[in-house]
Image (cartoon, rainbow, N blue to C red; front, side):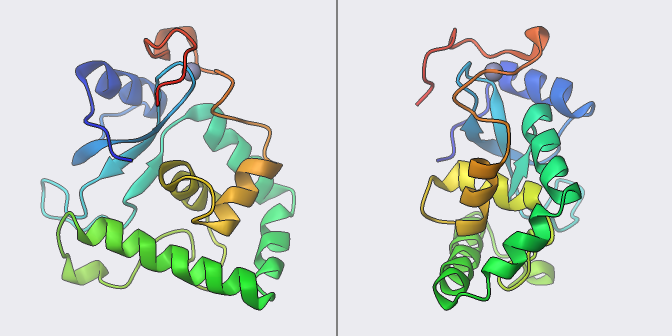
Length: 174
Ligand SMILES: [Zn+2]
């Protein structure tokens, strides 16, 4: 899903990241409160530089949960899971899906074939695979799905700072 980013979305993302996002195409996923959790970024930024991370995790609590899993050895365990052919195939398909999503918003030669997070064969950044799983929905990125499952953050329960909350008042934004 890519929803257009409202002024309030851009404001919340700036609060979440501590800087203004450039090249915003829209919002890829939201918290239960409606605040963005994933920003979708143009494959080429306004200044001309290529930007491979189409789905970027903005939510501080989600980012912290992914960081904890990277630090506690879970990342190595997730890399191990790719030994199973079924998981490896699904992860390679996630890589292809990621590239297709991005390609629909412009071909950028410098990053052609490069997705994010270590895909298609490595697990290098849990933030990137989690962002993909949140935007694409369950069943697209097996490693991203596992990060969501194993982490202690969920988009179903709002953990946003009061000033960075969306306007859905706890109702589902979808
Ligand atoms: Zn929230």
